Image (cartoon, rainbow, N blue to C red):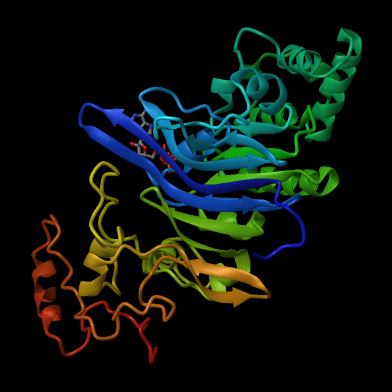
Length: 391
Ligand SMILES: Nc1ncnc2c1ncn2[C@@H]1O[C@H](COP(=O)(O)OP(=O)(O)OP(=O)(O)O)[C@@H](O)[C@H]1O
Ligand code: NI
């Protein structure tokens, strides 16, 4: 345990699944993380990693056929989700769990707000921007219509919308994408929540506007002390805005650390691959490495480490041992966790294990076959970059 105080939000072993005709989708499969007051915590990973489902779970907004099936979510000491054994041994919702009405009235919007990627989905096109903001403020705070209107104008100004009095009466389509996103930020901030979950809020914007929005959030975060969970697939954004990071792969958190350690002392090969796939000043575009292969389906995840079929460091043991997210290092007193058995903390025989031949994936490229020689126990050849060192 790292910290002085209780975290604002604590997520323990959260599991959310979708029960589909094709089978059970283990979208979120046992993730644990904290958010402390005033922190920006990243949730990063490729499409389908489970970032959005995790976010929706925190607000208990998972829709059928999806369901939270396990774990615990605690916010300011209150139970958003928790299970206990009932009289007949069946798991049931804990008695102290917040009711649906409490979630609606007290938590969503007021305590925990959300910003989505597409503002058009969150704004009603037939009402003015100001009107919507005013109504939201009026509904959630104890203000008269006129006070709410003034507050709405103030909020528009606060998020950097020029001429807020005029723009108040305009419709969402009259705003640019970046301006619409600012409106959503205003709406999220309107009730002064303690936590804002931002699900890829800048993904649809061009890079310049994205940078402006990120700067804005940084300023507002400092001013209001709001905590954020920032969902993104973009490591560049993570570097700019996050204090701590959770890297997700196929429903699991595979690495968790303060942001600097994640970049400079990367512990999981998947994180490394994500970092390699982003543009960096010291790399020309031609050198960028896309991550090999595609993420498998959450419906039938690979055995052992779920990343092993794509992992350059994978050995035979990785097919068998499913690694928990374990502390492998400490960064200024804060645990650095990674779910990769190549680290000493695991002690499952990685060093002695035979490197895996990269499965001849369904690539049309026949050159992939040249890698079959990797099964030779004579140490990694193709692609087994560093990593094992003298560990
Ligand atoms: N309504 C649903 N029914 C069945 N499966 C679902 C449903 N919603 C999400 N999933 C599955 O849950 C998994 C996680 O999806 P999620 O949307 O959380 O990913 P994500 O990390 O947010 O990806 P993206 O970056 O594309 O938004 C995926 O395998 C997805 O197919
Ligand atoms: Ni998503």
